Length: 253
Image 1: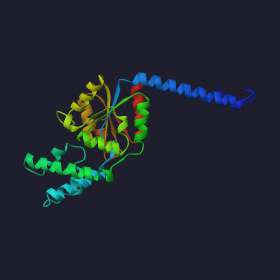
Image 2: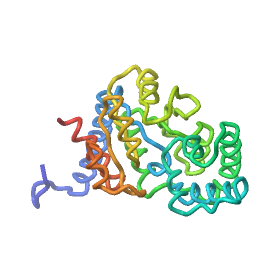
Image 3: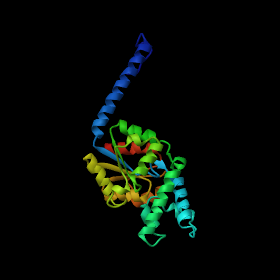
Image 4: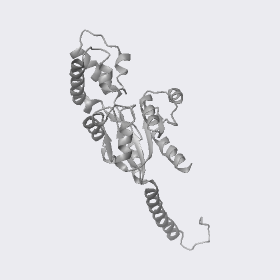
């Protein structure tokens, strides 16, 4: 009940009581949310969703080609096509043998590690989003077409690795995304069927669809809203804060 003049002799004491009770109710509410959400899993892609690696990937691809395929003049548009797909598949377009592909991948990963500290960062709002999801009791996971060590290193640089209970990199997958194997592994890990897939590319949306889970396309990297609509994404987030509202809407429905 709101305080009115004359209702309480000591307004300061009354306001202090309200503040104390608010804290108790807030704690109670979070406890309830944790119980309700304990079997719900939020699965994230990594690059372009949690961490901004656009410049990192661009520079790594260009330097890899300069070193390994100097005769080929790679355009920026071609370099940007490496964002999302399985790395080996991307390199197969430029060489003939698997041995050459493997050499290119090894070179790429070495350069990527050397540049990561300089070029990687997290998106505004992501740390607060992850913190709030954990407080509400959700389980958080990453499924990526990068190897797990690189995913973990990037998350650590951005100080957000502490929020994740399960990280599935490409070396753990039977097939890379959009194959749903990574999502299935996460569901098995948490012994649940209740999950949401969040990513910045059509590949992430297709992965969720193939696993028959709801999907969220995020527009803060490079994929446009219209592209996600055409791909059949269930929801679209323009800012990390939108994800909380989306999840609450799913739970409410």
